[in-house]
Image 1 (cartoon, helix red, strand yellow):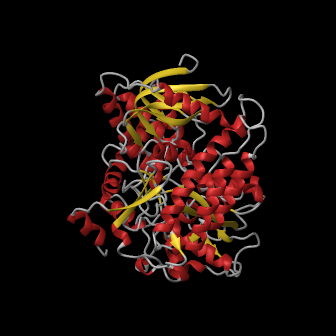
Image 2 (cartoon, helix red, strand yellow):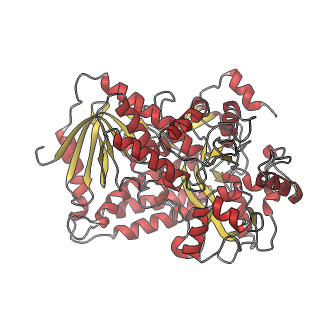
Image 3 (tube, helix red, strand yellow):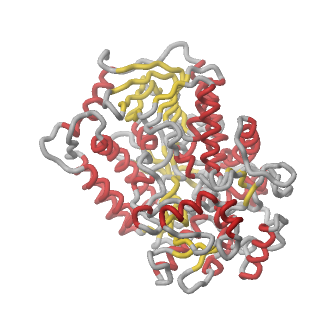
Length: 603
């Protein structure tokens, strides 16, 4: 074992986005010696992509808002498949977490009387997203990094954790490597917090960058933890579609929150034709009513009309855009048009949406103060993940915790915009707190199994063995293309069964992968290892999608287009007890009567 670099920590946090930073801060504050390990550079986190704002019922923009309304919106947004206790804790604790962030130095936009300014977002009854222009995630990461670094947390950058170590049934740390040198490193830890984000690099068109290769989901499943809700993938309705080099890059929902409208090539605001029956009482059904709402928002007055249908849930808007494109009413490059220029002055656009203004100027040579943007759906967020205890965030493996996008249950079948940032604050704190308590309750460090370590090392070096083999980049491209076409926004049994067969062939090809060069900084080798994460988790998504024979939230079945009341009573749980991935159906935890009455309220 002396040939491996080794470290000992009470708590190891894997991932340095908002959830990981918040967990590390809390674990350290509770007296745990804490390591923060990230595969990229500190600050290179997907939290930065959450531009529009953080959802919390501060009631500074509208006094009618409350945690109860936020809870109800979240449950309705998730098509009632959410873990109700997580949704409740999230709605109740989000305001304190945002105010805490402000105390640590976050600079939010302000109302005239000095309160935190909040904007409208899809699925939220009232303006609820505290924001910093359209760069909210960046401000959050800056604030959390400053707090964490000054707290003395040890940070290990450009270090990839490949597998979780176990001592019997409990977690014992992690095995990984330095991306620059390829040297293996072991972390012996009493508790591990996974905060690795999502799985978007399994799809061809995605807002996610190279880090999102399903690391945490796969490591948890391989270690014996349950995954839940894996069939629910969120395709954000507005990603860039042109030029090809930036296809999929996110366009914040804040554009629509500030009054932006969606139009097809004929200039029609098609969302009026796409309001689900469940939401007809909440959304404007004429342009006149919708424009009256926008005018009230621009004037900073309480809206006297219903919200525009452009602010419906993300799954509804994404499917509506897809329908327009398939019907031949799309934009020249296969999307639709998002117009803010006709609703806001150039000065307001540059002030309210500076990131979007510069993004389109620099990447597409489009001036959004004059011309509409071309937009289309992009794979953005994973609702499913590690099944956790709502109070502690501990998984079904003792000592293994999860927070943020890698954990499941909070968002149900569909996440509301802005809920991801408050989710990572609320549950990042809880994960760090209870991981520290778990570690402090142990008298000694768990044992590391030398045979397990040697096995992981051999597997990691496998791509260097064959004299000839497959190119990892070709396999990855084939995986992404197949998942986009067969397990995308709309699915069918034939497509899903084809996907499973193709995943079997991709797994065989991954077993023959060849990495050229040596072990020092070698992106091809890194991708060859990541393929195992992505193929296994792609199979988990596909098997869950095949099992759920209904359409709900981020999961749409062409052959089962209706929402089935019986499917709304149970979750799908994914496990890998041996070589095969299995799907089990388990009933939802019953909701208390007072919360059920709250969800059912008509007003």
